[in-house]
Image 1 (cartoon, one colour):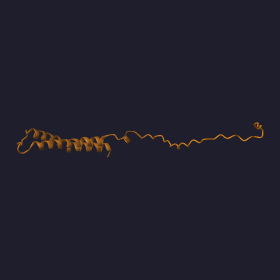
Image 2: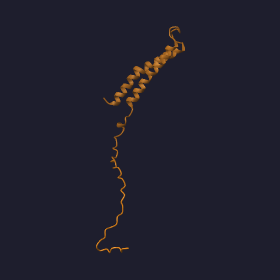
Image 3: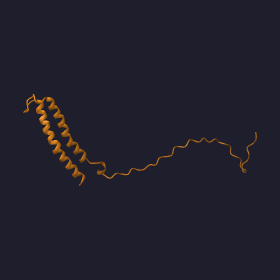
Image 4: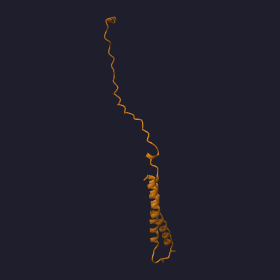
Length: 116
């Protein structure tokens, strides 16, 4: 099966199994917090409604996260990677050698300098 098809199936399944119940839990929690439900205020406190609202946010977030993770375009799928130019490291610079100038030895064709 293709990865995109698998992602679509997972997104639809989580939307039906988590998203829809999350919306109904959110509605039930909001009604409970408001105290307008079919139950008396003595049987369900508003704290239960707040807990249901928080739980519903988690249930609603699951299909969104699954859809983003499974249907996003991954970098390796968008384009073939371009090979970066390989640069070899340069050897460390050698220390500067100091050259001391020395007098040239006399050559037979050259006259010797006069003695002082």
